[in-house]
Length: 590
Image (cartoon, rainbow, N blue to C red; front, side):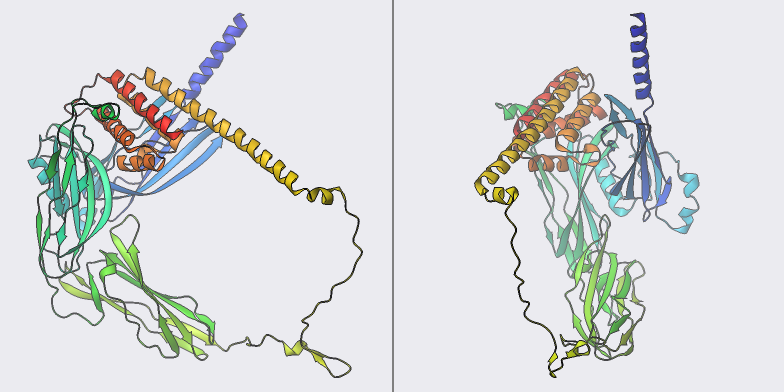
């Protein structure tokens, strides 16, 4: 008896030691970078086994994450996972990457925050990057003097509205752009308390083309209050010189008599506030006309940092074969609005231009435009495709600049293939003088058919075979569906047990995130709330239930970050509410 007790204690000790060996770490490849550089965040989890969930990233308002990679290695049953996130900074100044969390075996691990410094990238600042990388973060009451105009304007407007629970601000990167010069517009909705049913109305514009650039979420301390914000971004280009206007954006929201008013409405109604609306201030731009002296190769591009490249599909072809010529221009702004490149006549070729293609380069403010043409050489020889010119106007230097592609050389050799379907060199002359070029009839050979075996006879029983196959498929489906139902039921029972014993908002959030990951394959670590709600809608979750979940999610964020106006002691009520919302989702998924 004592021996069994000793073995049990030893086994429990080993299990506890295995759990304690889990290590979570985070690091970046640099602590100082320029605004046009990229940062790699590495998150390593060691000492785990079995199925695991993704780490939960914090809100990253200062960065755009555009690439994710995962590496896994297993030694003696213990797994090490390495997650790499590549991101680009949005503005200069100190930026903090908050704690990253990871849940495993009902325990939550957290990393320390990481602070990096973002510079504009000129030579004077580059020499000071290392010394200033660990400079303290400036308070919001003293904005960084190096902030770009867009971020500085947003920060100044937010400071002026400090203390209000809800407000909306908007700003542009440049109020006096040239025609076709790209201008960034950001609209931010700040809130320090919970809300729901808040439709957003984008601003109207005149004398401007507006293009959606996506949205981000973030958190900011203004004065002594913690605000969350949702930011919508746009890119604007002016069509002609003169006055251009951006109307106010609007958010109409509701608040309830209790933090769970949305769920109460779902099952019978509750006292709610009337609609309230916040507006951003209108903005007026003074669009400048481009100066005189436009070169013939100017097609309307305005900005800096453009590149152009020409490429041929092959540098050696036979006469009559086509050569695909591609000219690609990349640069800031929207190149779709620029004019098309003109292909000149090329000696020795027939040229057939194709329709150009344009679009945005993923996760950046740059775009591309591709011009294609098919070149058909008429005779053999060595031909040179001359360089193509592309001009743009640089608003920083107030001058036009011309780019040139490299010349291309194409060697055309004589054609070796004939157009005839016959090869006369293989034709044989018969003794009677007839020359056979090819055969067009193949005669059948008569052979004795063998006796039918059992499989051949059984194959004629079509109905019996079909019935057997159907029965086999039905049996397989019942087995698979039964197993899936058992797995789904186990996930829900485990989540309900976690919520029942949860004693903090963090434990409630961990149980909710684990349920979404296992049940719906929704990994909430790097997803904004609107993407989570969109995924719920794709799974058939009712709009009312999605609204109830949105209230739950904002309550969890508010409890975790403890902004003003929230009671941090209602964990039991919050856990019960989370259980009701997830139960409703579980029933609608059946």
